[in-house]
Image (cartoon, rainbow, N blue to C red; front, side):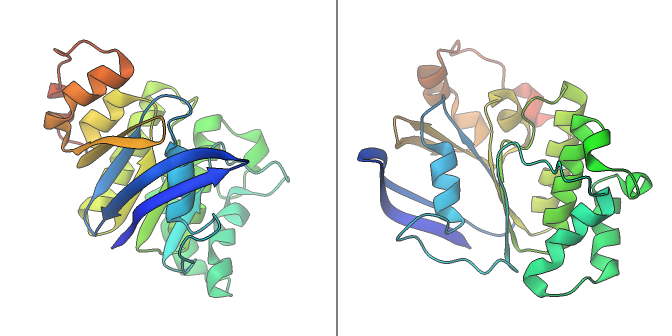
Length: 226
């Protein structure tokens, strides 16, 4: 279980989050959705313990992937994944190999991350998180700038990860991905939570925040996620 209660965050004299409470447990994929500036990334950073006055998290149990994370240091895919073992202070090969296999990039282990596609690089960064073998994944926009096939592939992986008992909290701009893959969708606007509901109940709040038609078809998330 990971969560925060009645959290208010002030950054640079500006209140970014107002009395926000959120909790997620094993077996849940929770999507944080909302327009730019809603406070999604700030909430995720707070959950990760990266803001002042927020609980410190054990990096061996909680994996954090920041928005747009991509190595440009000329490291190989395997070397990037191995960075996930730093919290354990080891370079154990087995967890790294499993992470590369789970993320579907074992065949690229010797490739430099700055010479592969954006989708493959994003999977390498995910492999770093998986190599940590955490109980909780906190991921900020892991599908940003990816094509639909790559985005759905990553979300299928995250849904499967949650379904086997891990906790996954992910920031998403693409509401259609949240509707299809998340167990719960938390909608934020102007630093406040306006809804925390299953996908088939969240549409009115999403419509109000995003300006979507109330009749948006939720059926895509009812398709098998894997």
